[in-house]
Image (cartoon, rainbow, N blue to C red; front, side):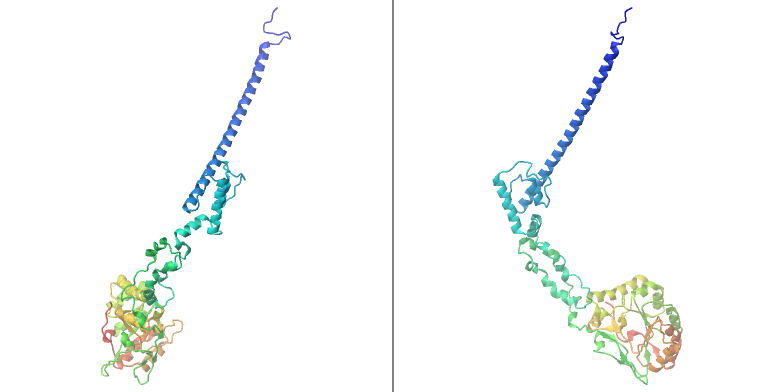
Length: 442
């Protein structure tokens, strides 16, 4: 019997052929994978080389650009990567001198000369810094220094107005401390101080700013108190009592200082209303802000409301502009919150004043009001007591008196009714400050 397809060993020859064909196919697959891996590796290397070349070209371009801006000696367009990175503060990591193979001696000498020129021009500095300094001499100076003549000083010295006007012509000598180059003139319009306002913000330097604290001398037998005047305050619209009263018309001018509220003012207003007595209340901005209804009541019941400044500062410690702001801001705020204009009278906080502050206050249309009767009633934690207040008025009342009364005093609130009764029985009427002289806020 014949078996086709079988070899002499009785095995199927077709099976052997199939088995050999599978081996060959696996070999070809492995070869293809190796070729793909080699191609991929080559591609990565090629990309890396391209990146290195691009970086080298960029560094060369930057170096060339810096050298052209600095107007230094011309350097060859193609320099070594080592030189490019050195000029930018970096170190060549490859250690190779150049990717371009430019090793001509002439080019090397020119590059060396350029580097030596850099070091001699400005030791320790980079070329870009040197270029910046040469184009802008102001860059090496303090940019805020020329502005000292235009910004208000924070020292609190009222001589600021005078110093500002004196420093105005000094705004241009910047070239004394900078290189005499044309670009130095360009920034000048930015630092030229704005001219000060004529007459309104200058001229007060001729008035002394020596600070004084108001004081007075109590007299016996109801004689008028003596004022502690270091100069004649009436020249600047200042008063501490009415010196033009008549014996047959005794008068007292009730004045209240209102820096803040402790709950006593409404009761005091009730007492004044019961006695048909008019008074003036000197208020700060904070008092108006916290108690606008009290200010409105004061005006509606016929009282005056005067200026006690915005923040209750010592006026001689302020500049002219700061003084103006303290006064006008308080008055403007009262009108905004209550609809009433402030009356043209001002009480200097803490009684501190100078010839200059009185002159400025007068120029703004105010009269400065001091006092001829006072006692320690301002410390809420250490009150003198109701009887002390009554006895003090009984002892020191006098014709034309201007007593200082603090609205934060419980003793004042408790004694006010009896004090007003005492004064009425002594023949006094309660006058208003417009009897002292005309004044009008400007």
